[in-house]
Length: 69
Image (spheres, one colour):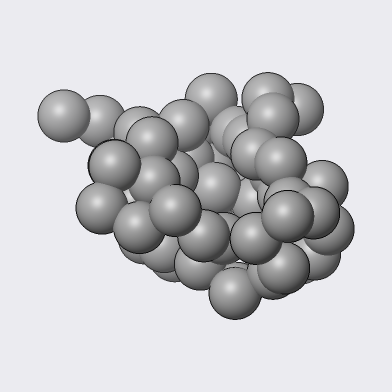
């Protein structure tokens, strides 16, 4: 199972906007929440949504959509 990329692979990256909210690594095959804008690895968020039907940031259930970036 592939989670995110190790931050060391991106030596010039100085921001955390690409960090998966679940695994805290650089998002692999990123998806984001349409409400809060947080980024997730494809595998992390898909596994999360199998267990819970809400955004990890607890966005309103009726409003959020998780979509590929």
